[in-house]
Length: 363
Image (cartoon, one colour):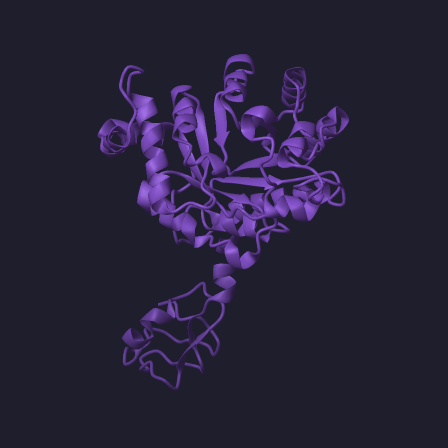
């Protein structure tokens, strides 16, 4: 896994949990700030550019919202206006949060980059094989967080090839699989990826059962691609996110809501504000616990060394000239004298002076 030199970036994923209401959207920004998240993220799309009129809902969406409306109708209700995007971004920044949104169509992407001025973008798992959209993202020059739910390592590599091509090629060069692979394999392409791409491991089920999480896949991606790897968490609760940080995740993305009982596709798999704050607190604790990986006494331990360790001591009175042996030389606390690691070296030596019973051997 990539070794983190920066604190874990915690993305509080509001997503569509605003239910299309501006008051809920602003309340979500406030909740993310109070929970001490780093980023609050929404989703930006035009339903007519995202799905066909008769596209079915995902199975988890049917479970949460029923089958009475199409996916198009549901998403249309959940669109955020351009003006509201500007207002939410301003509110997030006022509260000390970074603003982020996932674009699901080209028009929305251009809006986020050209009008909102975002310099970091999130690519959702469902777009990992959408080469034209990947290329469009790459050519913005923005830092990219790429979610990899449902993907194989080969599919992730192919997506990175598109991004590498977009970073290093001119607009006149014709995109194709061979050009993507060549860009990925080039030193220039690898350097471009390292400069601005983060991968997110993800399980695209809502909620995702623990047995489907497979956090060790983060290690596989880190080893395969040499890029920082984070985790987009769709499980219930926060254990998987905290565990991912312990495994080296550099980004955590977690859905949150004001009320898990609200109607909508993502509320049930989200954390409520108090739980979000607790998760972020646990993440910061785990970060502090991880340390630098160098095995050495910690400052907090130094005072304990003399108390908990042992020294060579006289088990009974020892006269000057008497040989040290198993009957008169032992190991007892405190640990401020000679180390018991040298016990055998002292056996057979003769005391240079008297030692009282229980005294440290200090000659």
